Image (cartoon, rainbow, N blue to C red; front, side, top):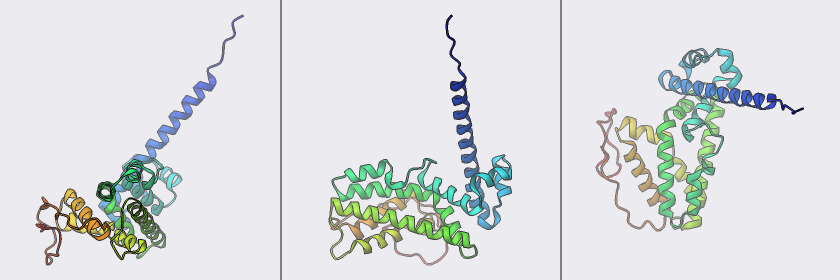
Length: 248
């Protein structure tokens, strides 16, 4: 008699994989809906019911996956910064591997400028929503502190890599260099320049790269200023502040 092997284990594994994929797709749909809601309605105006409705899921589904509104905002920010929902930190991704392999500080700063600009473009509005809401919400105060700390970790990582492949600006300690880069990476800088002053993301990227080079890299004796930003008219009517040559 020929033995017929059961396909049950394979079938169960297939169903399990499919459920996992469906759960992940649902989670991402909720995160995308939440990100849009937070940007449009602000933190106070966004409810889990609103997000659930936009994601076409139940409120208990959102609560089971994320717990609180603050945790949902954190998840939306994490995905926006990274550009995906893979559980890999920013300093463990491909750009970081390339930066560590770089032979010149300029290459490190080029890579960092690209990554920072892309992350700001996707996440700056959400991060500012967390900072602004932190004034009234203890949960958001904790989140804002966490986000600021994560930015400091990334800034210090970039400074350490720069120190390995080159020399920091004469007289600067790693701590001072980290604090300087931490400020340059503030999402408020991106929002003020791109949204309020009408810069393009490319102009921001050039400004960030130029500023980081002059402030941190001892080999950057003379770097040409960024080209004129191709910007729209700024929304703000306040007195213009100094910026890259040609910036309005």
